[in-house]
Image (cartoon, rainbow, N blue to C red; front, side, top):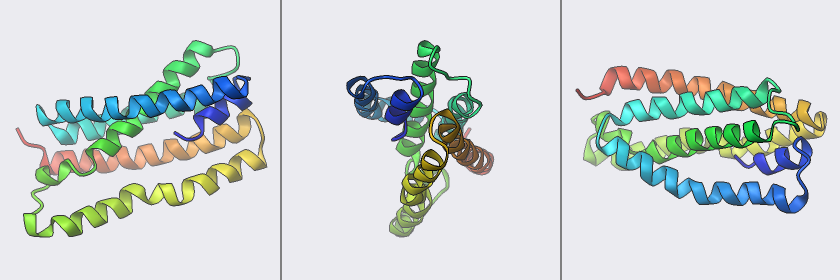
Length: 172
């Protein structure tokens, strides 16, 4: 979600202040999404909400990756940005919530948290440099499309993994 301010500046032609405002808005919705999805997941199937979060991020990322979100489509930019952000923030809120569904024994919780963190936060290690590779190599919308194709790919992987997890461990 760090790339949205740059997208606002580079593609949507927002000035520096308005582009930074996009990033600031995302900081405010992160806890709201986390709390809301957490409450919903507590009242239903956590694994389903994890699957849904990847599906939502996939839809939003596809809108950016295909180049549909352009300078003249401000409303679509806002909707697509919120869609990707909600999907990503929801998935992050549920990383550890699915441990109960997977029947992880309490004695292995520390190991499970370590593995989940390794897998779940690994993209943070290389996402910045990878996004920079695309944005420096192809300035403007083309570079951003490349960056969002990466988000699409990770959303598909997460979608498949969360669906499998849901099928294996979802409670009735």
